[in-house]
Image (cartoon, rainbow, N blue to C red; front, side, top):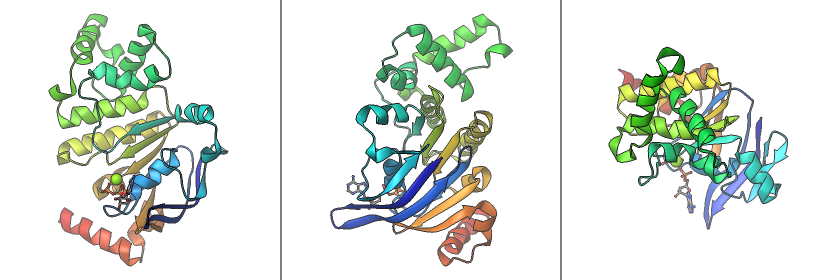
Length: 261
Ligand SMILES: Nc1ncnc2c1ncn2[C@@H]1O[C@H](COP(=O)(O)OP(=O)(O)OP(=O)(O)O)[C@@H](O)[C@H]1O
Ligand SMILES: [Mg+2]
């Protein structure tokens, strides 16, 4: 469980988070929405300990993550997977190297373990066939072709999938997605949404997703938190969101409707 308590963050004179309080129970899919620049990425970075809050606390599985020693922080981060804004693959590394990077950084060097983990994650995101559905020769052939591909050889949708695969290695309990469908065409966006929803169900992870895409939100969210100008202006279920009288929520919904019609 993630508990965010009265979180404040400013950069110089600029107040970005103005006392955010939020509880994210285990196993749910929580979407964080709000207009550009409202503080979504800063909130996530505070939650995972990449930024220090000025005031307030983040408690993850009972631990105050801003009070942890470096080693403990690294340990708890092993339970997190990140899909950063943009696909954020390293262009000079192969697909395989990109996917196992986190494990490598944790000191795992055994090629057998690394390639088994990469294969599992790349299968989960649909870039490799399920081993039980093909012969070993077929699987190995596909793996050989995929593993040495460079990011420049991949479509936008494939890059996102590789980014998701990288977040999955090491069986995280929490996966953070920062705008996973931005910049993708509607069909590919839908595939990525389906993937997130499947992973959330199949792996029983807790998914925290920042998105501008209300199509995605209505498809995958259990809960929605909406930030406006550093304040939490809505926090509740998708149905509560649709029925909300809050003018900021309604403005968001209006925009969504005009896109759909
Ligand atoms: N490291 C930083 N130093 C100074 N200002 C920052 C820093 N990170 C973010 N900001 C500022 O904080 C505000 C919120 O940024 P944030 O990245 O959280 O927005 P966002 O809601 O994720 O927007 P978007 O939807 O465009 O990604 C912005 O005004 C941004 O310029
Ligand atoms: Mg952002």
